[in-house]
Length: 220
Image (cartoon, rainbow, N blue to C red; front, side, top):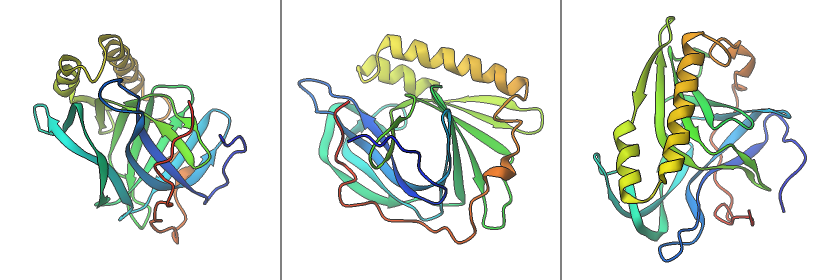
């Protein structure tokens, strides 16, 4: 059953990348998953915190692409491996129903990274465990006070279209979203201009394990 009540600050939720079914190749399933702490859960805004050393689950299988990290069509082995998030904690900011989240790193004394990471993805949906999305490969890195934008993984998006794991229509939607967020960064508009200190995590928050049923999906 989908959760309707907002989560409270400090609640542990499951954040998942859900791969939609591709008949003849695979059923709908979680591509990766991790836990996070809720900072804000409002009508149109969700802010999550992923602490250092958070355990991740990521699907196993045959990968290809220019850097060998994109799953080929039908390549999922039906299993997941576990890894641990390295480096500082990360704040994820998502404004519904936008097709992106903006990430920023923060260390254990509250010092923010000088760069932002824009992840293009399906607008988040609420679940009984937390929030589901679907990663769309393309990203932006926004650096410095002048908000310089670097496009990341455009070549991998092209490969995914050619491989049939992302549709031409979906790729076009993703590129349009990237153009829009490039303009937002150039204007230093929200969320780049936001007071990120309002989203600092509590000092005592630590990584939490995934629940046993982390991979059980709800009917869309």
